[in-house]
Length: 308
Image 1 (cartoon, rainbow, N blue to C red):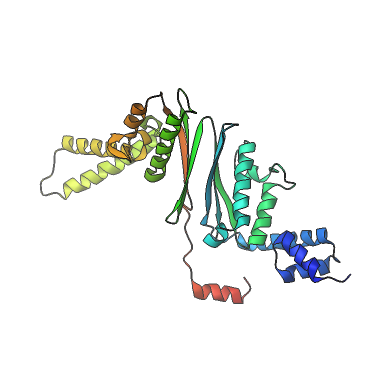
Image 2 (image 1 turned 60 degrees about the vertical axis):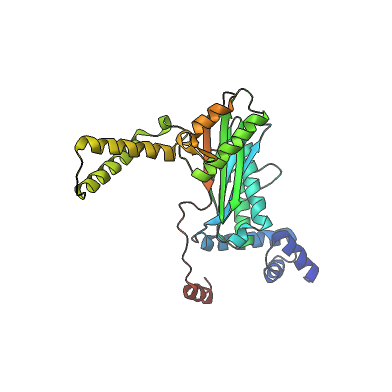
């Protein structure tokens, strides 16, 4: 059958693929739109394999709380370029993944990919592959954290950083405006100061031991190079002081409160009243720990010439 420009336009709107790819797909499938979509999906999946090795360090961190269900999620999904991260197709996918995690208590990313979201007919993994094919970049669902309880979330997007933070509190009345105000301040604290634990009791013993060994060796080295070496008992006190400083840096409740450094976070919470307690929190920063690609323009042009 004859393939019209309108047929090609319709397929392009359905798939976001190029005009020539759509025309070729319709020709290969004798104008059958459903078969053409399948053809393009299969072709797209072949391209996905090539893209899977590319570093995806851009993207979004997204946080969402369903207050009715008392379930929340922070998710990080990465893509290769900041431009792609701002497209509607990518943002819609991030929001879909977040809602799917809220609706389904899945253990990990692999399990998530097997879930069919509400209102959809395909699994998250299949939808991911479709977005890779249509956006044309490697996309990775990197991680997510699902929490339950009285939750509060915050997304910071500025200066090139995207940070999503979520906190779980217990209080006399977690729905009160006073508690919401404290939660907001704590989320700003977590976002700005990047604590790793709520309190010192949560820090694993091996983390403390490793840091103490580092500080002890460092103090001994500094002492050996000093014009006036200090006795062993003084060195031990120096290490103790540094370990206190270490705890302040990594434990939320011990950190200086960002809005009033004369207070610790614990004292700020106590002063707020309402028996507020921090149960847990999570903080994701876009791209943290991912080694970004150093662009080599000459190599990129060479790869394009080879059709890679």
